Amino acid sequence: MPELPEVETVVRGLRKTIRNKTIKSISLNAPPSSIALSDSFKNKDFKHLLKGKKILAVNRRGKNILITLTDHLTLWVHLKMTGHFFYDHHPQPINKHDLVIFHLSDSSGEKIDSHLHFNDYRRFGRLRLFPQEELWEQPGLKELGPEPLEISVDDFIAKCQSSRRMIKPALLDQSFLAGLGNIYADESLYFAHIHPQKLSSSISKKKLTNLHYHIQRLLKLAIKNMGTSVDSFSGVNGKPGRFQKYLKAYHHEGNPCYFCGHKIIRIKIGSRSAHFCPRCQRL
Ligand SMILES: [Zn+2]
Image 1 (spheres, rainbow, N blue to C red):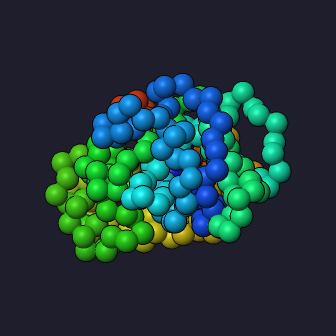
Image 2: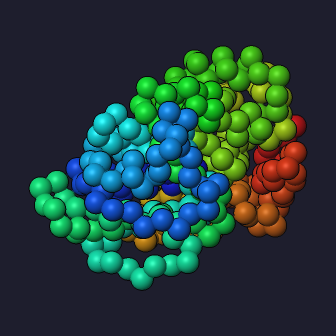
């Protein structure tokens, strides 16, 4: 699933390509579950509401993409497992997994000059349209925790020390921190030498300081490398990320640990897997 660095890569790609463009028309092939509208839009449809709107800004909050439009509207997109955007100046043949295609014109012109495809073969991705004033009341946005690149080390330590949970599930909880998933949680815990099942409140201040440092270091390095492509992830330009070559723990079970040479193992915590070195990350 795309995590903070992958979503940030998409947001930066969208900002570069679609900002200040106007949605001229839409081709829609999405199942009803992929699209949601505010209750205040009843009797109106997605295509009709978006037609003629200009794209003013593209931002990220956690793993969510927020596209600000004219008339106080926000198109809120979550990529979930396999959703991705692809932008091109030339019309591309329609793929059967293209759920929506936005046909765009530049700020001055009337003519369509580019196309933005939202493609999702597993169809868990969501596109939702809300008036801006309703946006932050929505479940999925209102409960989001702090951004991992913005939280101070003191606030991070206080949050962990007041949690009664194991550290790995806490890091994955979007209301604890918004944006981490399995890849960056496993990698950060690995570099900080913390066992994923360690109780958050029992981890020393020194180790939590180290964990905060590695979370921010790895997220920044991954953004610089356009994210991790271990599955289908690619940017708006269709290019995969490069951060997979830096991974040391995630999907490395059976490989020797970078620090001590012991084998990396994989265990299940709840329904999620965790990759770690049992010698460097002791319970
Ligand atoms: Zn080790």
